[in-house]
Image 1 (cartoon, rainbow, N blue to C red):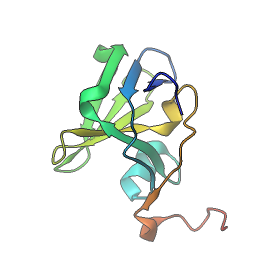
Image 2: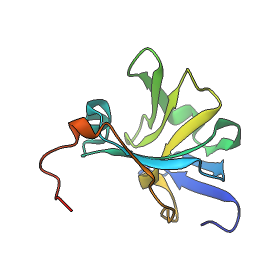
Image 3: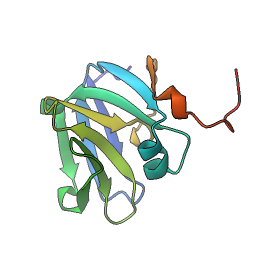
Length: 126
């Protein structure tokens, strides 16, 4: 994992940069239809970390949130559209940061697959 005890990430345009303290509670691939729509992919992939250790280092004014349900907030860069995080108002002490925005890439295990009932049939089978 990262020797600094932190994860670092940014959006596609580079306007937003953030860091998050380790440890990662768990990493997941979420196949819910909302994650599929937001990511334009089969799943949203996240690292669940403590919200207290999540710091936007640059571009906080570029982040906007979408309330995708009564308890879920999805953060993204309003310039390039990069999905940055998912958070629940029911668990304000946690934040799920997107694995695809991390630099260097996430090298830990992905322990959970969520909402596999809506996992796309077009994905390759193992």
